[in-house]
Image: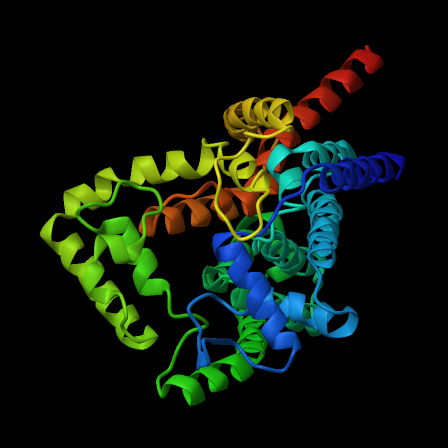
Length: 417
């Protein structure tokens, strides 16, 4: 267990240093999350200017609000919570990899890689929902991996955890199905043989129950059924408007007429405009898939930009102060690492497929399934480096696992000879 202890120790040390050194301030939607958490903790509800909102999912502000209500609202508390979430993610990633790969060094090296991964360090101080979302999706996956026949409590717990993840980011609703499919089809066929459909019912039943209170609140607030949030139409519009370019763009700049609409009407109007754009030029929507994937999986500019926003409530050009050397160094590292990770993952996937053909399977399906569903969601909506954050553990597993297995086999062969 010492490799795990080492990885966790490195993760804590690096993140504590980072939070103490880089004075990240919440701006744009990060400040919005913080403000909503303060309002929730004060018992004022999930409102904007006195009106109920569901534009951004309630999960992350609600998480912060629980601790704000106990200890009082504080930026340092929020950063400490995110720091803790990134460290917990390292540990749960180790648990998942330990279940998926027979050689423990696949899990050890995955944990160490996450302990030092640039964006995972930077998001310790950025008040984004990604660290919480990652803990919950990894946690749900770990619970499904721990399931054994007729241990229905594990499935219900996994469903509840995925339900909480859905309250953070609605697209999490598809992840249990993908993970269960990968486990039942390949990774744990013996465990799920003849019971996959029952497992799915347990997981999605618990997930649905978890969403009931927020669904009722939304219906009472808007008089309509709302699945978690009301920004789905805007997100679809960003990815398919005639002026779209694959990355985020302000929906109100793409379609000024939606500005000032009530959330429900805006959501419907944005979705309709997106559908019209897809029908008018489907080829263009297909051409944008490449830029969307590139912006998500090959861009390393996101973490440095947001981490070095050091002026409260004001968006600035980062790295123009005394921390410029650190900003420039971190930016250069962050730009290179995503490409290196994808190269490692591609090499691991190829090696895993070759070994599968040769009768020595070393690449589980679950990491590939999570990666593919994430890529599919990005292709449907728009690209953003933040969307790749929760997939980093699985990319590392894909890249590391087969090489560790090969190294182990070669080492064993040399010893026997």
